[in-house]
Picture 1 (cartoon, rainbow, N blue to C red):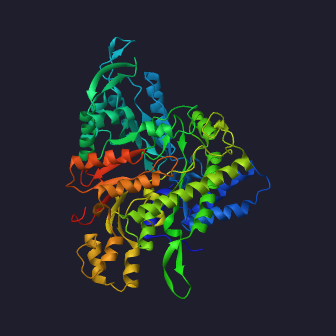
Picture 2 (picture 1 turned 90 degrees about the vertical axis):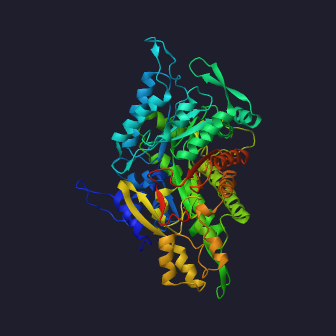
Picture 3 (picture 1 turned 180 degrees about the vertical axis):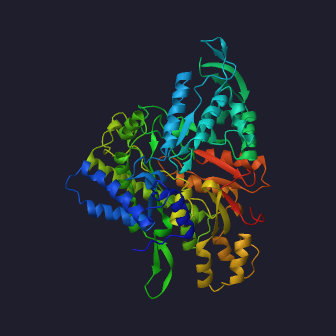
Length: 581
């Protein structure tokens, strides 16, 4: 079966995913990679059913991946059936207020990065800068200085030979060092291997709304150090995000309201992209369905009038994805015993989507429309419903997750489930290149752009549906394609119908409120969280960013990440023209 892979997909697979010999020579092709992964993940079936039809299940997994309808997270593609066998994308590690704990976490981070995973940490338990150190009567150096130790360790370890380590650093908004933390990345040379987010509480947000002060609390003593004006701190967070894209914000109380296992612990950190809040030592085990493949021709066979969502196919892929990801938990070779205990105790998985913007183009619905938000919300509601149905069926077949007693599912009349969570919307940066579709639930970034991947490789991208629709609607010309390759937008073209311009709307043509509303639409029916970048043009103001942060809180998002174009020397996606981004 010939695989329908783009040139850019082949470049990424050859660089990072396909098996190589000791001399670095590639010794498998993409089809063999998908076969390696499907065979390995299918073998978990024998743990529960010695008579399982392994060939049938393996072929179903293989076809879903090779048809680019479903892909697991990158470490599973890279490592399943190989020596490392480390299949999880990211982990949250605890950092307690002692040198032993801090440097144990540094060591554990090194082990995880070497195995191909990313890490998230809360530094909120560390005593503030200049606080007393009992053993020496000296002064503490504070969370930010210790983050620099983690950053340096990450710098010198290349993950599993395939990708650089990624970290998320989190600090509570009521920590006395919040100002140092919120502004540290205004210097582009600081914490280059970290994303950072402020864990914002409901108490703080209420104080912002009412123009009041709120307490800063020393985590060592639990005593109030001083009061700060909430509005001043919020404005500082906003201004830093406007300058550098960081910090992001996590609405930590809302995250814990959705914690399915509060008896096991509280969540205080996420994976590096923010879409997976996790307990200490939990891994994230993610996969994504390619929505651009979940369509069928509408109308009769003679006269197809466009496309419609194929819910029957989508249901089949959701069920398959849940089974696949549950198998991954058993096949994973965990880097630390504590991680294995948490992974198998809660059996959290996160099935999400990619290709949403491409689906909307096919449906001829503009991304920045109320209709698109309703489609997104409806899709995620459907996916979540089927995902939980599949998890309940797996629980009947294999047993509920071990920590279910005391969880939110431990109620009379509630059927047992196999997994503590089932859905997450990840960014799918590299996976979407392999699948040849738009990433996550992001809009089209630009109709023509350059994507930077590992080791500075530049991949040119031209939206694949554009020429197809231009030919079908009769406005195609070579000159138009050349123009788009240079400029990345249809805005100035009089030869392109207005309706087509609307369906090919790009990230910077969408108002920030449109981005936030779409994130909120998906969050309504997502167990974990939603990765979404709220794109701003270079001329956006701090007031624009503030409005987006407040709106994300009001609409029920679990966090928010913004990026104003041009504020970093290196950015992953760059338009060919500066006219539209």
